[in-house]
Length: 342
Image 1: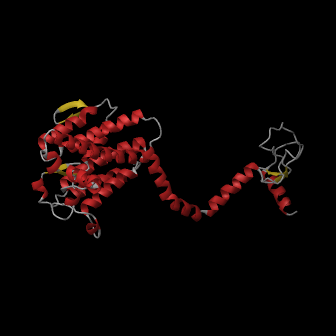
Image 2 (image 1 turned 90 degrees about the vertical axis):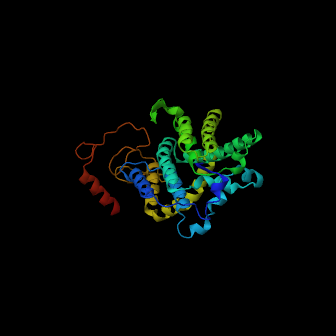
Image 3 (image 1 turned 135 degrees about the horizontal axis):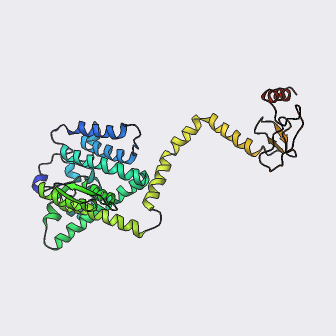
């Protein structure tokens, strides 16, 4: 959750997605994504790319998608409307909407940097599970904070504030990314431990950009801490990651099946290779040197005198070709021709 809006500012939001005039930052964002994913040896994490693409589609609203997506005024995060009417559209979709090109650019740049590091470190399935958990936790904690402030007499955070943006999830990702870091970061003239960078950024953003949602950002930080605590407390497999992995396997099964159908020769060759290595099952074994089928009672190939590989047989010297047990390539070729001429 990024930018907060008072009720007065909400009236200025149009029925569309809330896009302001272009400031030329979208081409710069596209260039950054291209440099990260296009360079040689790049890991190209797919979940990070999908999240950026989803946010971009919601912000740009191309073609028929403009009529399909709800307007920004319908999805802006408002604690009162969510609790009073159970409005899950506001609860989940508000994170994917942005007020301006600047707001969208800075959030997606942050997502690109943090997402690549985290997804490369933990894997795509675990990262997708993390993002889903941080989204639910940050929005839920923001609701609880707003309701708590209402109990103490602060009504504006509960009734009047409308917020959108992905930065609540990004604050949670920052907590997870720097949780075990011993590095230091330089932030507006201050050198602080990386693990406390999110807290410093929370205060600095609120000081320099007063219109932002302090509760939404704080909810993201607390969501990151809660996620880390849950990961430490629960040592079993992540049920959300298992669910995402299962869905991914189901969705990708038709693709894998089509790939197997398009490569029948490869499958047949692998079956032949496996069958040749373990025998045919009809009382014969196949020599790995000349592929001659020998009786299972014989331990020496009748064609090339090679020892059967799946049995421990003491070496036997056969006096062929002048007492030399090894046959020449020409001799093996001659015996193969004799075999097929039988």
